[in-house]
Length: 195
Ligand code: SF4
Ligand code: SF4
Image (cartoon, rainbow, N blue to C red):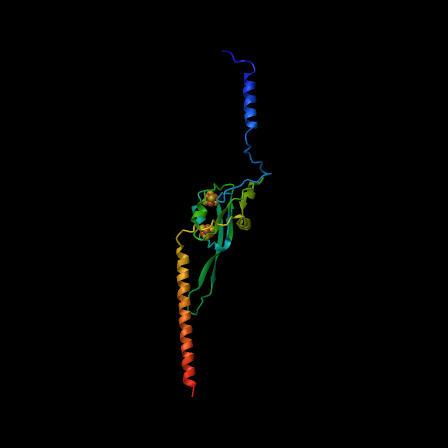
């Protein structure tokens, strides 16, 4: 049966009318900023103070897009006869976001909590070379990293905190004991000195 002339137009208008009466879900970016979940993978921030230049992130990165340069510095021994101490000093830390596939492996494997996800995503560039972010820029991203979520009130206490509390309690008990002994000595001295 041949199509009724104008039926296509009527169908199209029906779709238009249906859509016009529905609630709009399109976000008017960039006039309206999207509400991103806190764990969004936008860009990687570097907390340089925590980085020990262990190279684990660079070795594990499947895209080989983390570039790290460092040199060794030695410091004299703390006590005479001791050994010199050496440490790695970071010279360069860069991530090429034109290669990065946002897998998050580098952040997962970093043993020293030096890398973090930031939900910031507005860093498109017209020059691809600009997508290699050097350490200063990676540090700047740290300001956009959201605070970690609050701990579950029913969660088990982290063993580090339990250990620190135990050590603090032990130290407090030791100090209290020393004070008691000192008081006893003072009292004994006062009695001994009384004619
Ligand atoms: S997110 Fe993945 S691809 Fe990107 S730098 Fe980290 S390990 Fe490499
Ligand atoms: S894994 Fe962490 S500590 Fe090691 S080099 Fe990478 S950022 Fe630095």
